[in-house]
Image (cartoon, rainbow, N blue to C red):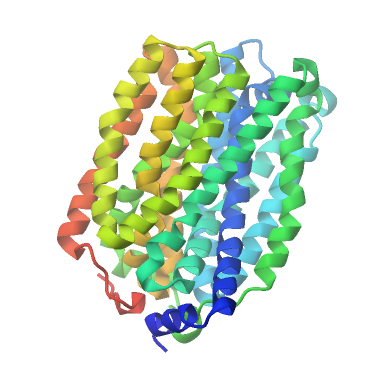
Length: 443
């Protein structure tokens, strides 16, 4: 049965189908939310983690090592994309989602429960690094499987809206992580925060994982995977038959990666280290950005369903590229609490307009036979090159160049790359994909 017919019947089936779609959204986004929650928390508490697990006589060196560990896990993401993405294309999106959440639980537990360097010496940073690497493998397969799962269950006419909850979940997670950061830094002393307070968000993430496991165990496999032919070797087919689509997808996704990891994750460190703002202010600004992303992404996805997904992406990319440098310049010139919060709100709105339609656009680029592998490789190759090491690169570049506009220049460069790839994609494939995703043929 064709995917469009299945989706059409689902939307006309009444309240039961709508409840099923809500469960599908929850199952697809909860893993992404947990992945992003751990990433945001690690970025927020990088300064504390650096002192506890990577002690050094030079504070900048300690922070760089901690951020390097943050980025090091991204080297494992392409491996996770290859292994878990291929597994999901061959054995089902549902099985891939279940495996990725189990690996995420293991990695999070290792970070949350590890004693500090002062207690067990060199074993402490080794365990933390191992936990981050396992999280990297898990995250490597999570985006591809969860996005495929969500899109393949969604009605074609509203695919942009439903798929946008994948990105909105990141905003909600950033909101929650920022709330943790704000409350912990405001109500705990520095000694309490270093002693045990920083572990609280990681423990919270562990408590959510059984719920995620339960939800994912009780949803159906996608109709597309059930009825379509499966690739015998998804990795080989992706690189041999869909390499143009893969390259364009990575280029389009670069701006999502750069904006997320620079504007969202690096912003608290930038505010504290470069603007000398109070940590609670830094977290509050990011909290606002998460709230904006959570609300604006579905609106952008719905707009893309009406106006053309790639065209909406192109306008949004131009907007990000135009506003990011002036906003950062204004923030540097007037580094007040109110300025920072307003800047976070503006930047959050700009990046949400680009992120909202993204999952649907990427999904429609790849045929169902290799969709999870293609999405996983797109996400993780872009993240590994432009995201994971962005905080480390920017921290070093700001220190070396003495220019605090480095983060803005980084995001603006990413916007230029994505704009070029979007223009090529519009010319090559147009703005409207076939009604059935399975009609897409390999390049």
